[in-house]
Image (tube, rainbow, N blue to C red; front, top):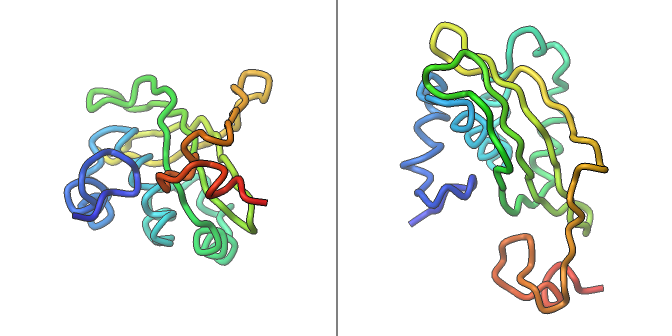
Length: 161
């Protein structure tokens, strides 16, 4: 069984894969956000571009996006909070944290994404990073489980020097 990269506890085939094949299947803003995260883990830049609102697509550098997707070792996705973005809404926000390793360091991409629904399809419209003063600091003990999701202790995984 191949778990979905978005940490939904479903298989990829039952979760993000159908949305990757037909973006209109994302019924909520969170569904699209999870599918976009999974697309990053699979370097599916075509899906990422297709689900970006047309008003901001020009700002996407395809080469930089592909390099980032492929160079990151994606760990896990954590949905922090969501507002609106249900099947009955035309807009919504999803705050998330995407953990990944790159160049030997662990990173956390923390974002509040805005989504818009047009003609029944959800699109990513904007993303901002929350103020650091509002972010909780990630405190990891040496014997804590590693945040990358490997199942190892932090000191045996990402905490090695």
